[in-house]
Length: 273
Image (cartoon, rainbow, N blue to C red; front, top):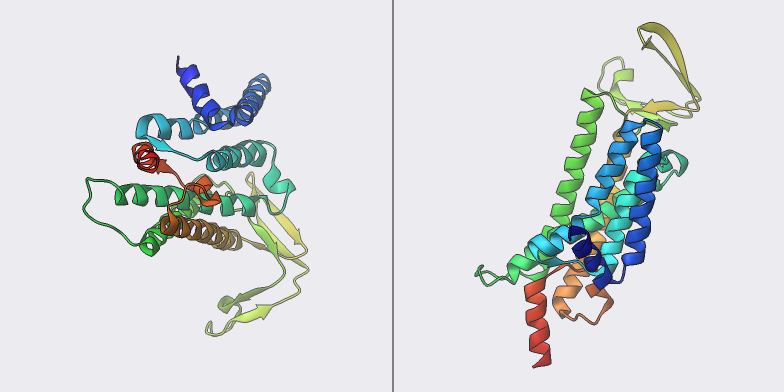
């Protein structure tokens, strides 16, 4: 029965083909990773299947209806981040893969923040009406807050478990006061051809040569992620602002705006009258 109401949800959206393809491909990959005894990838596959249920949970448990276009974006985002990004190493193969996903993350999180405040704004239980610009601003701030918290999580994982979620980068120049004798003036080192690192790997002293530049420890990746998250959040906030001004479900803007199902039905009844 649970499977039926899940499939019915996607059939109503007209995206059952996309959902079926993504879900089957994850299940097949899950079986393959079990055979390979790669339990880290097995966990990622299971997590992906769970995340695929987010639109259904919002629909059935919280009565929030996601437009088909936004729902497809969310499903593809989950698949691209977890399956293509982590398991198939698209983060390493394609230079801008991480940038694209963080931009989409900013867009999606702004959509969630916008829907929450807009639903409250139209609820009979709250006696306050927020202006369109304020709703858009809240959506932007919500998205940026989620983006910052995610960067906190990446930094925490890198520090405690020694992962590389922040993705170190090779840079050609650095500017640091630590290179100055008085420690009060930043010294610029440009056109770096290589750097050497002396340390221990598996308990053994080793010298590592970094070719073509200096190894940046995560800061460039973090700041880039936050900037593209900001771009995605701004794009959705503008869409949300224009939608509130018009409240016209016939425009393309409606394809990106989550709605409370009761509120949507109420609007449709008014239109038919």
